[in-house]
Image (cartoon, rainbow, N blue to C red; front, top):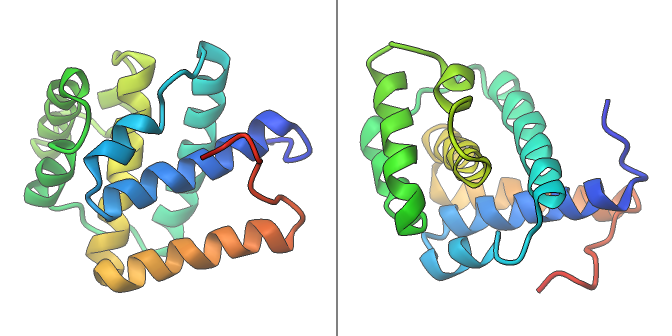
Length: 156
């Protein structure tokens, strides 16, 4: 169970929302900036939150499909050193060679963060469409604030 009273998780939840939004908005500059300057501990918390959000969303949306074309489209927004790792993972998943968990387990930490964020964004896009995917994310971040987890002032 995550401890949402831990400032590292509060920051991670907001960073996860920011990265997912950057992928949904197809903003490659913001995608690259979302992990800039993070140490290993911050990246690990970021990844943990992304996995929790991805898994909850997967269940809420009824296991939506993840189109390979859209996965590749969003992977192209990742930093160049990450794009190859993410597209390789997606090809393994699409070929039903492995599931998402196995496809990312050998990736570098940054690549895992981007891969899970891309999968989350694609699920939202496939299930809800671009406009409603962003509205869903807006509602999620409003819920964070309602629960007493305002956006940390240290985030851009």
